[in-house]
Length: 635
Image (cartoon, rainbow, N blue to C red; front, side, top):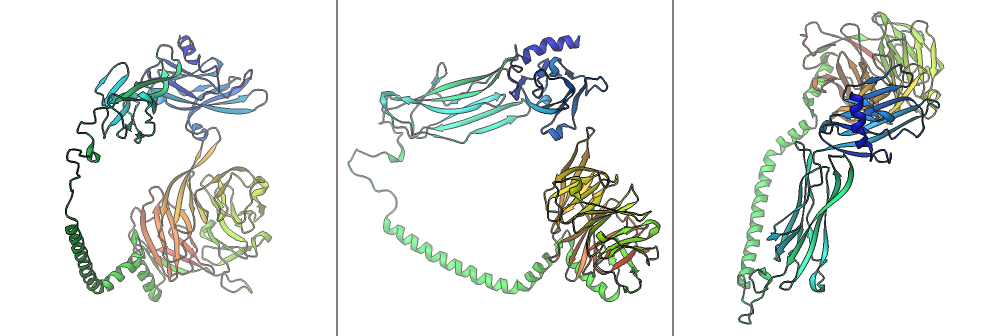
């Protein structure tokens, strides 16, 4: 029964639509029982294998809203709800049309024989009125049969308006002509057009005025102007669509020039002489001179007062300016002072709610290599409470007591080639980003390495340096420094997609299975929402950002996420600070201050330990037991 109702009613709606599949706009009155939308991407005589109907502003957004899926094999056919039906010729049927049905609908067709895919869209606008509203002109002394009569005046403004029109009409003024061959075509001006959309009535109010005060007409002469509205007319009876227009003619009539309406430009012919207007010129000159002298005196007094006040308050103002230079949501001046004080008595790192207690630094202790680490570019936790340190010589492994136990050397991992390092949660491996642009996968269990380059899985990619991050599902994100391209790889050889971000990449990190954070290395951190749709398409959308006022000229050196908190490292000439944010709200929770001038990044491991690494050292800290834990202290 429903199908019969749909087929009968849809015939009237689709009569004007199916004649030309290139038409991309459909208008339908609210309350219509059914709307049939043609699949414009369906070619004539094409056999459909799979067909989808979506709704969304763009095709990528529409993929999240599948209305209908049709499979010719009958394996999986689905409909979002009873409101949507698949009609003959694969048209989309929408029952009981309402305002929320306005939007862009996409039809995607997969040909049965060739597998070719095509998609096309149709824009649907649900309107409230059944016909184009007629314009109204004001003021009118009298009107008859769409003619508005007005009398000439020096301040004559005629306004033309349309109310409760849907869809939005086009309103235009035009000059028709004047009686007696009088040419007044250049003596009128238009005001700005006003347009307002009423969400309650789903209609538009449009208006525009015309200024006719410069017309110069003799008595009983006339000039005519026309206000016309054009737009789409929707007839409820047949649901047909057509272009319509409505107009009102404005007739301006000249009046007797002896009437006192000519304004200040009129002349007085009664006495033959022009009366004197305004004050005496000599008196005016005296007033101007006195005003000028008074102004000069006032400026001098203000200058003297400001000099005295400025001298008295200069020291205080200079101190306030100096303090403001290091202010960003927290008292950065105090951060600098705390770090400077710590240099003399302790190496602990302090925040508003937490203190990291210094435990010592990693000892390399390899024969002939000395005790110092060289060129540290990253640190990761390893099994058993130890650490893996990426240096210019390769990967250095440390046990839980922080002594070196092994060294992983590789031709790709030496000669200052390592840029970044990340751990993979599903494959027992580390992923190393190289200066040469490749990625090296190091198996933790076997020690074997596998080197790949992005252009091996995507010939169009040309990396110079690699920043990498891995989310909780094991998806790899690789970005080129000083560029805006992010590559996504599902495994070491499976390339998925390439994205563009809004800022140049300096460092990036991932959180959970849906968030990617990108820093430009200067003053901005952006959060992107990564979404996996059921149809296999992936989208990365900008969601939020942090604007940081870094101390010094080093900017943001590294960002990392741990236990629901985002950490940003900002180094400066005499120390560093570590900013702690909530990953969801981007609220600044606390600021850690340190005297480490060369801090490059940090890594959390164990239960309450954190490793801070500089270019030539890795230092270990632990949360002090005397500190009180609260909801935000998760280190």
